[in-house]
Image (cartoon, rainbow, N blue to C red; front, side):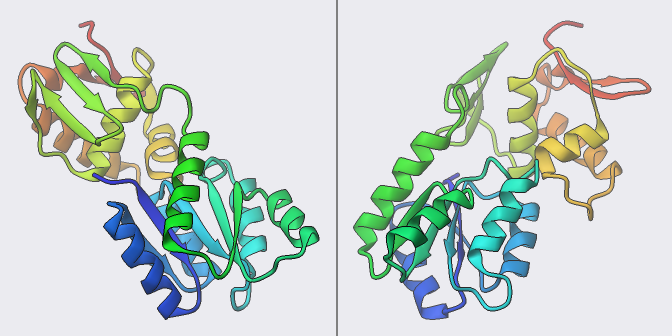
Length: 228
């Protein structure tokens, strides 16, 4: 699975031009045309990076950036502002809103992709790109692949995020609410029992003997552990 980029721009031709360039560079694309729909997509789908136009109808890109950086579940998602403004004061204002970079229109697709990759490298937390292995179960965050003893597993995106969180936070019990916050991003539309559904799916994908790594903690929630 590729890294996911959310393009937020009210002009469809610009979104299409950027999407085409990013898809050729092997990124997965989400789109939104205003701040409200962009915020919903961020909460629902947790993109790896947001390309955010400054001049949006209604709520501006700057205001959306400030809101995302205030909220605990979205503050770590990097943002690149796209703008036709070139003045130094505007650049400072953009970066002070919490944006990680700032690209002035018009720009070439090559420049955009280079800047985007640089921000992703800079903002990826230490350890997130390192492979994790437990009892032959291996997760590779760079390629988004999961394998057991070298054999690849077919795994859905939610189960992948759940497994990645568990494998990087072993031996601690988490409540369903904590898992919703960490894996789903605090999406208010998701009920706690949804966690149970995805836990069952994850165990089914892992199969014997690895499904027992995902342990039910009675009265609390779930824990990932190689210990019985």
